[in-house]
Image (cartoon, rainbow, N blue to C red; front, side):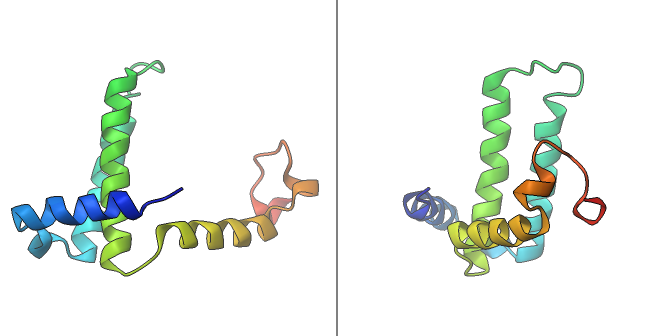
Length: 106
């Protein structure tokens, strides 16, 4: 995954519109949640949601998540890899494979 090009494009888009002034970590976190709700809404009455609608809402969620990471000076790729490592220790393959059980119940 390479997010560098995307983050540069997001920075330019935001700068052109002078929206950075509104992008506090709190506002960006709220926006992630709001857009995630809109993504979920795609599936509210139909498990077969329109792919274009899902893609648009998912793009919004990812946009705000990347803007938040950028605002906090976090490398999205690295924080994902770090979290995968921690989660892998909580859910070892030999105990978790094929199970949805929470880690403290394995």
